[in-house]
Image (cartoon, helix red, strand yellow):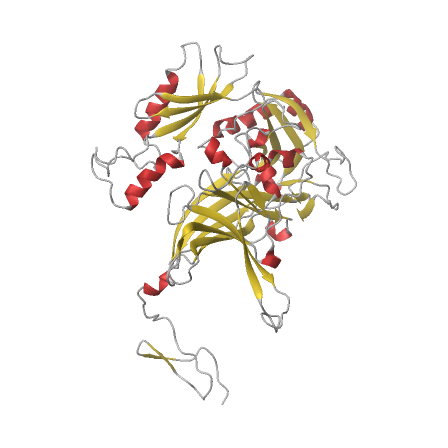
Length: 540
C-alpha cells in the first residue's frame, strides 16, 4: 500500500477499522455475555512512536514501501459495558476500555473500571431518561401538586449526577420542565416553564429512587419551601484574512464553539464561544434570590461557571525529547539607579524555566506569560531562543469551596496553567486533566501530577494545560437565548521567524475605499472613475 493511501497515524478511523475493532472485542467474550458499545475511536500513538513518522513526513521522505519503520501502528480505543456473564458484578454493568491493534487484530490492553468509577452517559441513555421519569409512580405522585395548562406536556432534561461523594452509584438527574406542544414544535423553549422538581434516577436499575422538591421562595427560603401549587406560562418563546477550523459541542442547554484560527503572521488563536439558553429554575413571582437573577416572571437563572482546559503538546522546531522547554516570563519594574536607571523607566524581563510538574497562576501586573521555546536553537537576529508565547488573559478560577465535591472532582480548575510530563512518561494516553471519570471523581488528574513533583524536562517533552473560566452571573438580556460569551487564547511567535511572516503576502488594492472630504462647498467624491454625491449635507 502506498504512503498516500495508508491512513495518517492521526486520521480518524475508517468504517472498516471500526468494524475490525468491534469484532476483536466481541471475540473476547462468550455467547452468554452481552456487550453495550459506547464508543470506538482512534487510540493516538505515543509521542515517542509518532515522532519518527512526523520527521519523515515533514522532510518529504514518505515513499511507497519505505516508511513502514517510521509509521506507528493504527490502534483503536473501544469503550463498552459488559452487561451479562461472569464479568458483570451483581447485575452491574462493568465499564471496560480495550486497545486493539488494527493491523493484527490483537488486543493490546484491557482495563475495567472499579465499582465506583462509572462511565459517561451516552446519547441513548439520555434519551431513555424521560420515559423512566414520566412512567415512575414517584414522579406521578409529585406532579399531582401541579396543573399543566392545556396543550402542555412534560419535558425532562437529563444531567449526570455523581452523588455527594466519590463512592456513589451510577445516578442521573432529570430536571423537569413543561413544553407548549400545541404548535407541534419540538424546538419550543421548555426552559421558559420550569417545574420545581428533580428526579434522581438509578441508571443500573433504570428506576426513579427519589424526587427532590426545589425551593421557590427566594431569599431566605429553605430547601423545599415555596407553594408551587400551580403552573402558569412564565415567558414567551424566543431565540435569537484567516483560516479557521471549528467544531460545535452541544451540552444540554449550552452550545460551545471551539474555533482554531491561523493568521498570516504565524499566530494561532483558540477562540471559545459559549451561547445557548441559561439554566433556570422556578421562583415565586415577586421574589429574588442570591443564587441567581430573575430574568423573567417566575424564572430564576442560576449563577454558574464554565471551566475549560486546553491541552498543548508543543514541539518548537523539533520533536526530540529535551529540545522543547517552558519558561515563565515576567516584566518587573526596576529601582532607580544613577548609572543603569537614572529616570526610573527601566524594567527587567525575568525568565524562570519550568523544570518540574507545577502550576502557574496568571499575574497581569507582571505581564506573566509562558514561552514555549526550543532550548538549543537561537534566532539569527535576536540571539534568543526561537519560540512561541502563550497569551491567555486572566480569568476567574473555580469559586467552589476546596472541601466541596466540585473542587475535589475538578482540582485542575484552581489554577490558570499546569505544566509537566510525568503523565506522558508513565502513560502515553494521558489526556484527561480531571481524570477519566471526572463526574465521579475517578482517575489521575493534574493536581496529583503536581503533588508527585516529577521532573518536567529531563525525560520527555513538556505538556501544558491552560485553564480558563467564564463566570456567568446571568443578565435579563441573556434570556431566553444569551449572546455569545467569547474567550481567546493566543499562541504568538516570539523570535521564531526572522521578520514578520505576513510581509510577503501579495497586496491588493482596496477598491471599496473612498476619500472623505473635510471642507469646501458641495464636494464630490470620486471612486472607481465615477462621481458620487457626498453622504452628508453641506452648509453654504
